[in-house]
Image 1 (cartoon, helix red, strand yellow):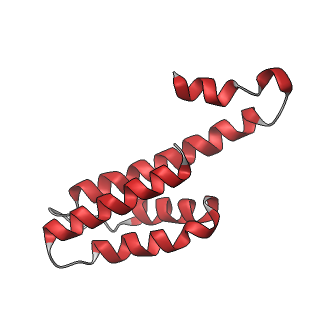
Image 2 (cartoon, rainbow, N blue to C red):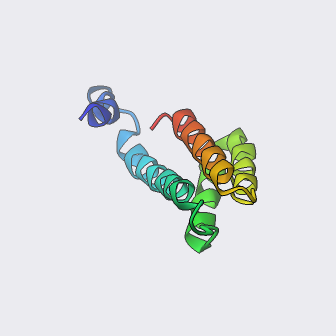
Image 3 (cartoon, helix red, strand yellow):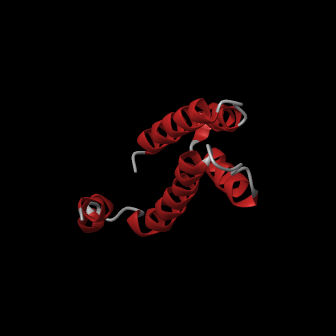
Length: 101
C-alpha cells in the first residue's frame, strides 16, 4: 500500500509515473530472482539463464551499481556453501536497498 502511494504521489502534478510503474516492477522481479538464487545457492547452482537475464536487467537499470552484480556472481562461485549463501544474500539485499524498492 505504501509503495502504491509512492508511485501515485505525482498524479496530481503530472509526471511520468505511469511509465515508471512497469520499469519498477521489472526491476523488482529481477531483484526477486537474485534473492531467490541467493537463498538457494548453498543447495544448488543457481547460475542459469533466468538469473543472467535478471542481472542484465539490473545492470541496465541501476547505472553505476554494476560492480555489485559482479560481486554477486563472484559470491556464487565461493566453494563454502554457507559463505556463498551469506555473501550472495548480503549483496542481493544491498542491491534491493540501493534500488529503493
